[in-house]
Length: 356
Image (cartoon, rainbow, N blue to C red; front, side, top):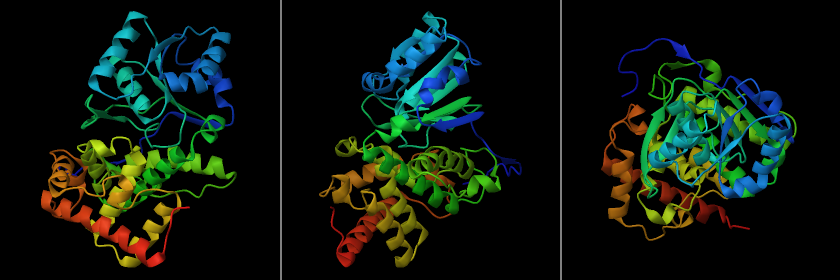
């Protein structure tokens, strides 16, 4: 239940500084120099080739001593412990995350473990992870493990829109799915949640109108506004159901925002949304190739047993679904998922929508 302690203070969590622009990595030393000179850089091999070499070159020219920590792919306790030990061994004085959501969440946890500041350099606009003071952790098998909360948000978020513009469109679409979920779940919550530990400020619950270049606007909406919105507004059913879907191995290949997109339709069904409102959301999600049915999630023949496994995880103690005021049970969540799938199939049938 939201706000069990009846907290009345309003909070607005955010990074200390947010910088966004083309080729921003080339100017990283200008912004990172105040954090230290010996960073631990967490990035995987793929990102290293795309942006890591350029970042290290730019930092070396400014006399930084960079220790590279090769990210193994999963934001797990084991990975965080390994990277933390590497940071201790090389006496690093701050942490840099270069990559996607799991790299970012791991680096935030490493910085917290080492008692250091963290700079986030996302290479996609696919999640709202960069600005927040929490990490979503998984087991090495890929199943959801837990949320980990930190006392402060990242010190710097530096977004290179040249790198992001060159990433696959699927990543940007995933970020849109996550941002849409932020807007919907914020509307579903009215009190304090574990995420924000206080009441939301007005700006945290609203979305500013972003003008200018389209890529810049979408990146800002996906990364900054979505991040500020979810941490100020809280999480609800969409993300709990996303976490539940990690119980099904067949959807592990889907991106965070793709699973959350389907979770948003589940949230709408749970809220008792009208067909008109459902149609509006489903049409938007389909327009950016996000899944709204079990078939589009890659599980057309999903069994009741599998759905109950998803529901059990979604309804685990402490999950974000309990921030809602309505009655929640595992059976209700299974029914909501089936209802979301039916709504998606119905809209596709009525609208004649076909993937181009």
